[in-house]
Length: 148
Image: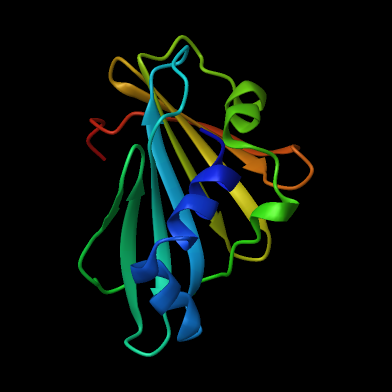
C-alpha cells in the first residue's frame, strides 16, 4: 500500500476527520516489513493541536485509531504526502543491506526525511533519505548492544 493511499483511507474516517477539522495534521508514518514484502499496513500519527497530543492511526484492511499520547519530540512537523517519494522507493534508495526486517519511518524537521533502518543480526543500518529528492543524507551502522 502506498503511503498516499493509506493517508486517504485514514482521512476519510470520521474519527480522523475530527482531528483534521480541529487543525490537526499528519506528523509521522511508520512501517516494518521484510525486504521483499509489500507494505500492507501503515502506522500514521496525527498531531492534535488542541490537546497537544499525538494520535496513532493504523491503516490496513481497517482503520484503527489509538488513544492520544504525548509527543516524543516537541518539534512536530506537518507532512505533505503530495511532495514525497513513496516508502517503497525510499527502501530501494536506502538499501536493505541483507536485512531480515526494515523499519521505515517518515518525519519532517527542516525537510521531509525517510529513516530506512535495516535490522541485520545485532546491527542496525540507518540510511536517512531526503523525502523529496531521494538523496541519501546520512549513512550509519549502529550496534545497539555495544557497551560504551
